[in-house]
Image 1 (cartoon, rainbow, N blue to C red):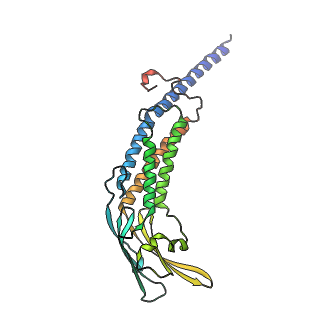
Image 2 (cartoon, rainbow, N blue to C red):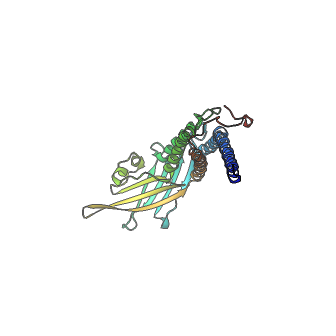
Image 3 (tube, rainbow, N blue to C red):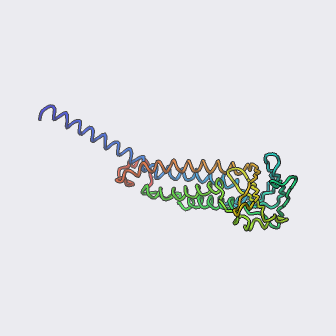
Length: 282
């Protein structure tokens, strides 16, 4: 055999050995992620979500804040809208609302909410429900379970991510209602005294703020138009909950991205080439 052929064969064997070593390292890392990092990340994620649950003024996973009550004063430009509310759990149990009626000089409107007819903030309950579901998905994974494939992990992470995204969206993006639905809503019956037919109000969560919107309807040439005034206040626990939800989402997404990389190697199987010295569970 010529010298050139010998050199080629040696180089080929060296390249093959390097490729095998690289594949072995990747396989080892794959199994370490499946057996160690996934469980570690899920444990860390659960701690973050439990801390987030503690921020909600509801009974979540042993949370003792079911009857936590806060008082908030709303701010609005030029004092067009004035409001003081008492928020208990996911409901406004007391409120005093004063606002100026547009296009009517010196016309003020006043209404209130009493604790026997609270105004329900469904967004808070929805966010809490999705948060509880995310924690339940984590709890459904046995701490000693050995994942065999990336698909198993992706399924679990997909469920958790979906819950976290829905929880966060519930607080950031209020559901849109048309004026007719708003006027006929159960919450409008909480007002005492009732507002005239051409006036409506709405309380909703938007990010870390509680917003009060006042709508004045006007029938112009057969079409209904409306003007809006708003007042808002910051709710500290909402801000803290959203920060924790964002951190949890980022952690979950990072782990999912790492698993996605390994999912490209379809020939990876647990236990295929992992030295026993790693001490990984079979």
